[in-house]
Image 1 (tube, rainbow, N blue to C red):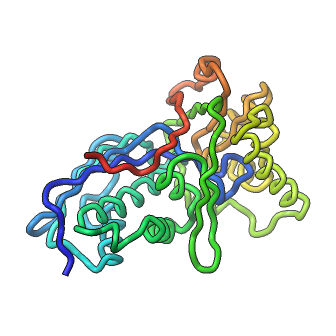
Image 2: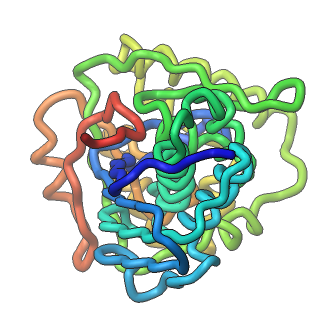
Length: 299
């Protein structure tokens, strides 16, 4: 029978941006906004405390996403605790395309493993990542949230894979966050079932170029972030987002829809003060670094 550690365990998990233009459901990048969470085993019951982003809208029971991820990880290790306390300090905006749900899932599985004595032997990093991607349904945000940095991910032979690639140190990012969100399911519902072969070919070429641009040739970022598959198709759900993307790109700025939107991500390579000055009224703007470290337990 598994035993549990005494005292709370703490983790931080980064925000993420997926797709990055043409890398639909396969490319993701960790960003320097981090949620902080704490959990401990109780004799019985469930206590969920939330402050910060999304605090007014998330449940405080077993349906809370972090709790669900923890339960799944405990099942993987064959150990369900008698009770739990979870405390969340959320910084990552919810329903904005910055990976808040993936951060919650990754935090949950990492916290659960840390609460089980010998958890590293019961659940490897690969097993936890596989579980987290299963829970999310796609790996493009989960992978950088778990591993950090720039990650290429997908599914092969019934398992998820994640390959980290280095990012040129000159690359920075600015995110423009609108005041209202768009649910991922709504954004995905706008995508067509089929695309022209020429568009798919063009998109795959730009995705390959994007890997080269981010890893060492950022002068190609504007061309490399061109998308044919999902951004314009989602415009009905986020017209202001696409309008901002077009304005920035017309001025030579490599701007994309972050994940399923409606946040806009713009890449820079030097002083980003001119970009932060482009923030629309009532939107928030964050000048961020590429986060090389994924989910991290705090001592």
